[in-house]
Image 1 (cartoon, helix red, strand yellow):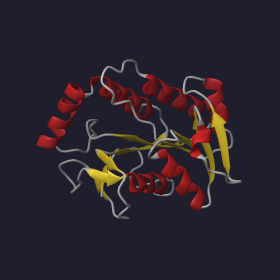
Image 2 (cartoon, helix red, strand yellow):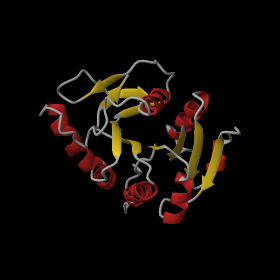
Image 3 (tube, rainbow, N blue to C red):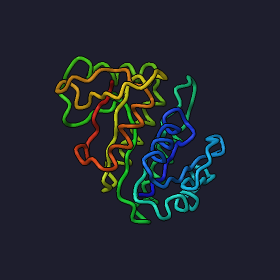
Image 4 (tube, helix red, strand yellow):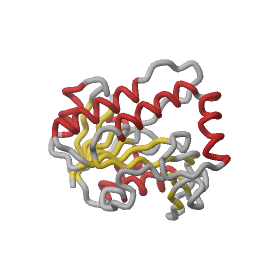
Length: 212
């Protein structure tokens, strides 16, 4: 399978690329500076481009069967604009135009899934996110809506506290108030969950929260 990875040079995206290649997939890494991957593999194609470049994004999708997006909003205070939400809309439009159906991406539990139950955590998270990172929350809302309204075969993994600890190989996944899901998860394990969704349809058209 050929998979296009957006956000390929980020903390999670690097692990996604590595794990896809280890699993024998062909990978297209799309980024502003994909050379940062510093990875050489005959099954890896690097595409340099901005998320706002519609034609370039389409080029990055050529021949691919699925997209894994490791994109996420900036958490810096004072950040304005919605480049990642706008870029996600560009990716979705390019997928619709090129016939690529499978989208796997990221969000946080501050964005609700309809299967969540009304718990204290579910109520507090979006309030805290709006107080601490209002622009990031707007980005996440825009990213998620672009995907869920797309008609694509999508899965969005909601993460809370990604860490650089050693992978555990264990995952808790499900919905707030329904399943026993924690907060922290290693970036390597997050990447493994995303890659696993290529062949697992359990969470198709769903946004599970995940943790170690």
